[in-house]
Length: 206
Image 1 (cartoon, rainbow, N blue to C red):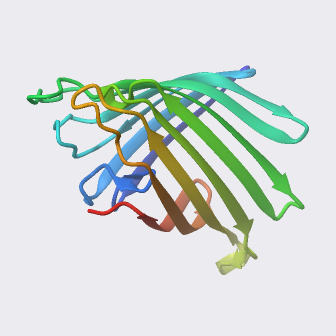
Image 2 (cartoon, one colour):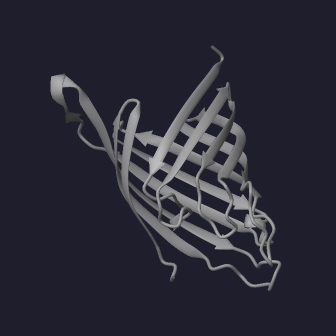
């Protein structure tokens, strides 16, 4: 009874991370498990990807602390992102990396939620460049949709904006381009299922 365990699976038309497709704009699948004991938790997430080094998947292993203070939900974590089965290239043999992060969220008037997050990696994707990311999200609860037999469907409207910055790479000593991304989406939930429809974009050129 002391453990809180959550298992989930996802089917996506496109695996988009921070505004950039990780599946070459193709469908992707994911599964995850999260185990929490008191303040502490560990989680693992496996996602299908299509990247230049042709890994078989993206595996994220995370450990951290979750704590609520003054009605604000905090999450401080460290994650290792691993890409098994990568094919070495002329300039790179692996793209796995470590990342630290903090997030906080608070609900207001039982109608909307404000959330923010920040992450930092000292060696993003093994490029030698540091990478930082910050994002904010606001989520509004919309009036419940009434279904047959009096059942209801929860749905929310969310808007998100994030900004990524990077240092210089080891090879070539050039800076990776900073960029901003944004998302606007609707999410529908009828436990235990959830459907999300979102529009993503960035200010990056092709």
